[in-house]
Image 1 (cartoon, each protein chain N blue to C red):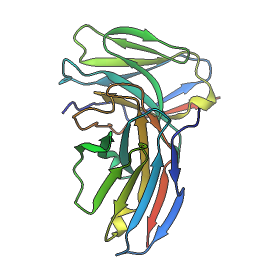
Image 2 (image 1 turned 90 degrees about the vertical axis):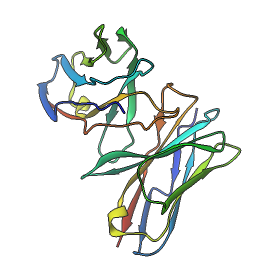
Image 3 (image 1 turned 45 degrees about the vertical axis):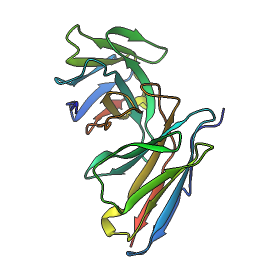
Length: 111
Length: 112
């Protein structure tokens, strides 16, 4: 069961780049790394998923080192609307395992 | 395309009653997972269904059960409700293993 560790909270300012790191020391060979964003009283929203190296989409980048024991979600030029809780999930959803969300990182973006 | 739909959005029940929550996944998605979210415990996995079969189950008592129909719609049932069952119940659907999962808005259950 891959456990994840993230910072509890982070603060940033509009226009800055934000990097949130997640530790997952016992990640399994066939595990993917997925990041979700959640606003209050809403369901989590998929941001990005990767297996190794770097993945980029229109909203974020995901950096995964060679040992895959950690991953970093990078949000370029954040805005106030990026204030949310960000979860790192190892393994993905579906399949014969128990998905474990950590407590997430509460990101607050200030004007 | 339509997203994951959960009904009802809000529910108030009395201790000891039972409740059934519904989840309609995105068309074509065969995997449906259920989660409980509380301020104290965070997001906890309840169970996952794929093609009408429960594929995995989290660490919850037997009062929590679910099922999936042939059209992939899923229901979750909680019997003998306890105050501690008050939570946001979330459903997520995905096409298959390790693919992007989409969550519904959730059902806010309050047990009084």
